[in-house]
Image 1 (tube, rainbow, N blue to C red):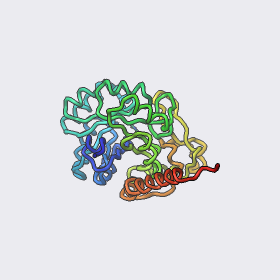
Image 2 (cartoon, rainbow, N blue to C red):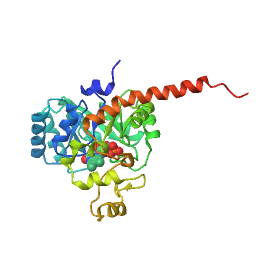
Image 3 (cartoon, protein in one colour):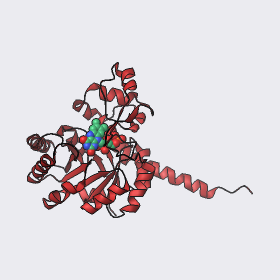
Image 4 (tube, rainbow, N blue to C red):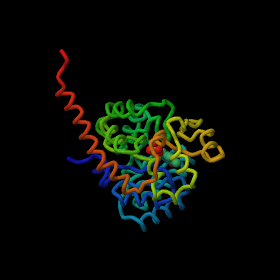
Length: 298
Ligand SMILES: Cc1cc2nc3c(=O)[nH]c(=O)nc-3n(C[C@H](O)[C@H](O)[C@H](O)COP(=O)(O)O)c2cc1C
């Protein structure tokens, strides 16, 4: 038996890094740890080529480029897709737009394509466009959650039922072993993480200090939906004012920030998820065993 996401991308652990920074250093750390590191492809084509080449000086492992499709013109996106093909990027993950735009071009160029979806309707459209992997982003996550506010508990099983045969990653809302066990139980094959990775030791040089301060201070009520079509989840202005003394530093972050209270290393994050996860899953099985052995009160 093997994991569909690991098989598809040629990685050790089914952990995808979200498109959380255009700098390649953090992605290289994640790829070297056995996940799929990512470069957020929000720059122009030349800058993208440079970032890919820089990544390769730090890691020879598979990685992805993330394209939020709503950003820039279709011509700019097509130009960047061309760069990915020329540079033989292994994986592109698209989001916030129609996967029809570049999926065929990328696949013809030998690239594996994942697409981020926030509903079953979009999951079906992505499957029809020929994507290799779905990344299902619920309302709790720090990313582009679409317009329907669908919770993880409903989104993952629904997408799984709608499109049963495509590898599926649950996007966000995972900080520790309980999160990964939960999304696996719902039917995901793996996870894509943003907020938890942003607050690792190795991530700190990629962000301003305010990011870790906000995530570490956050509680379950500290985030909200931004306005607009793609509606990323962000820190609330009054919460930022309280923590930083200014509300001007809007930070994209998931509800899972409520569960993050220390900066850990990437190595410890992988241990927590992939050694802690199985341990917790065994405890869950033990709970069911206890239920089975409980004598009913007559
Ligand atoms: C700071 C930040 C920037 C992000 N930028 C993008 C982006 O450019 N494209 C994208 O598809 N997702 C983006 N996301 C979403 C992440 O890729 C990922 O799906 C999300 O963070 C997962 O949820 P979590 O933060 O709860 O782990 C961003 C998330 C954060 C926190």
